[in-house]
Length: 421
Image (cartoon, rainbow, N blue to C red; front, side, top):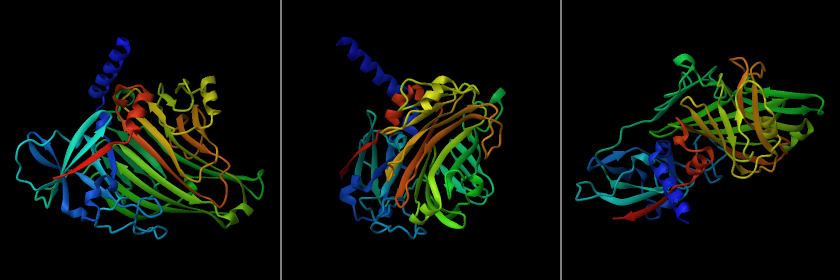
């Protein structure tokens, strides 16, 4: 009994002392957390916290949601906005940096405090204050997307894209990552998207990759905590429209969410057989990196240029439940990835993992798959709408926590209480 109590106490201390990456992540609340303010104008309220003994404005960002259940963009004529874009609605999302919260307010302040927001996350509670008609406003911006140069820059990473194509990811740099011999090094070779299907028969299989996909950027919404991009992609096979993909990108300082929805129309069934989709990231010479997943037990994949028996076993295991993939370089960059199935997915999904120093897998900038990591979806049925979210969280070292503990803490949703003044 005493041993278990000591163990739990020690685990709590380690979590609170060694988790800067957890606190630095963007947290997402919903309009339902602000019930007394539903219907009020969003522009009336600014967010503050106690810092160095005084109320200081902190950045926040409201994100509109559609009736269909996706991030809302005016240029997406297939969706409809919930409520008034200028007023708080129960389905709106609010973005905050958890670390921007502070201690409870003490003493009198000159600001017109309308409410206190208490946010709890992994055993830690922070206080935010909603100030009405505030003169002071936060001017900090943590991320930006430049459509001309097709680059994303945040306080923690930079990503460039080639050929004005959102799907052609090139150089990816993360603050603090140690390259070979201390040199600056792109962590990424490229993003790989692969759509394959039999055309008029399984024996005549055609594969489309990033080079065949040309997403059109329809709208960009810039905010202090997230750059949001809406893009569509049309795919034709044998001159038959077989796919229209809607992508909603939410790019945050240490996180990228890609919402994807599409329907394989019934007419495509006359042309295609057994369609499949692969989504993966190809690393650039990330030797000695380790990979762990939520559904492959105690197996650990280690990048060494050769696929081991343990890694082969991982590839045979179907994805289950609330999944995640943890990938650690040991050189100042870790990533936790999650594939969240929201609509229509009864199709089989598995880990995609290639560890081969000489294998060519287009699109390719650097030789080898070292490693190529992602998800494979097979036997996608026709006539159903699919909606899934790919989430990627970046950190320096996963806060020094074991992969399972880090994933559990990071993916735990925050809890909020609003106290009106």
